[in-house]
Length: 151
Image 1: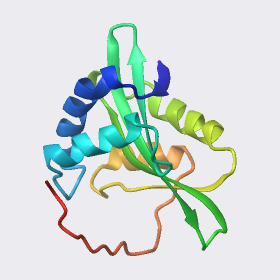
Image 2: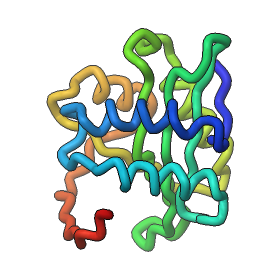
Image 3: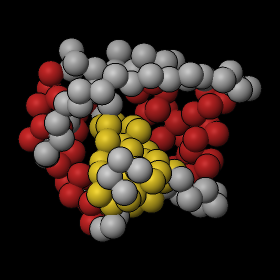
Image 4: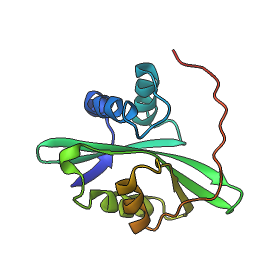
């Protein structure tokens, strides 16, 4: 599997995978097409220092994608990488590609001191995969407030 940053030609296949991911039980909030397209464009434009997208490809084409956002964590005093989306098409799961991505993202961000992601507790396969890669369940409650800016 090859990992690279998203480019314009990837917009449609990544959008299709995002639509599947965001319509799945893995997410609580179902984002609109406009939001997903805005996310993709923010990554393609490369002018936004807070978000990046990567695509995963095999000879036959794109097999998945990831989006990460970056912020400073005052709790740990440094760069935090938030793995927002991590998606592989079903036929490419359970091949160690997630582990390959985790290794890749750590090499891409050598100064980062914390990595975060969200997972539904019922998704035991994903929880086990993340734990295998050094992630632990947090004791914090995640609280959010959304401002509706959907187009």
